[in-house]
Length: 164
Image (cartoon, rainbow, N blue to C red; front, side, top):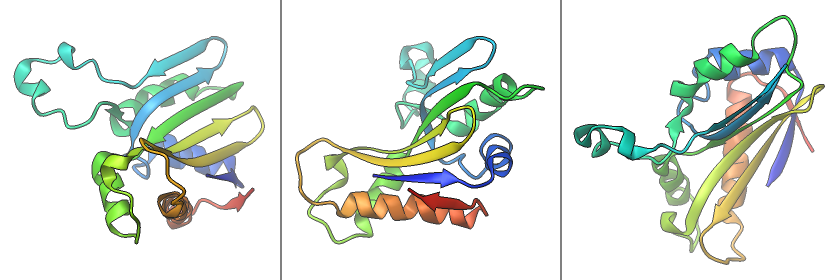
């Protein structure tokens, strides 16, 4: 688990809310505090969908691509939000690829989630990378690979950061 302090809040917010940089992720939840508080649980209620669509749902959470515009509408305006926390998670396919690319005893079924928690406290933004396992393991290779993936993602999108 690593924390990355974002150097340019405006640039990061543009990349997060109006660009496709994070669209491959799923959104576990979002909590945004403006004049009122908004809480979005990203877990899909599969029973909402017709059976033929339900059978095609590969993930349990909504994609950030689908939710991004809603969060943008909540956040945009003359005043900055008081705070927010948006928890993004890697898709099952990305998780499997990360595990496949490293030398580890872990399997993709051992990993519960690969998370990026985006936090704004009213003055600065930080991103926290985290790995949740379904098993107990002293093997930190998945965590190190995920930390590197997140740092590389930020850098590839021109987002300056300082590792805390």
